[in-house]
Image (cartoon, rainbow, N blue to C red; front, side, top):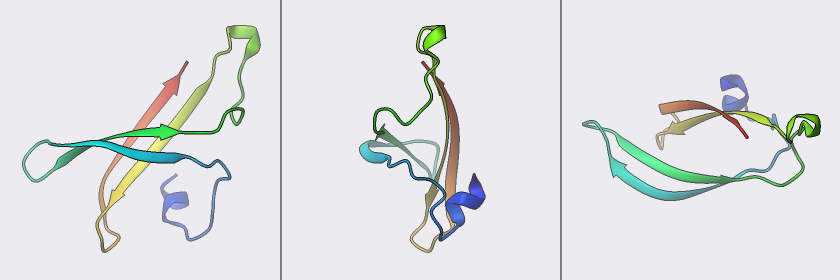
Length: 79
């Protein structure tokens, strides 16, 4: 996933909108950014035979103004 995020080419056709919700102080020299992701309906496979289960994997990276990675986070989501 990191290669895809660093590439000048589009690796995905799934439009995701991120909206900053809140920025709070964390450990010294760092900030915790809370955001909300919105994705279009119908882009993921849903297992209708198993109570409409789905699974998504996210990898995000925050970058400085010079493009250096300042932090990253991974999260899996099921529902």
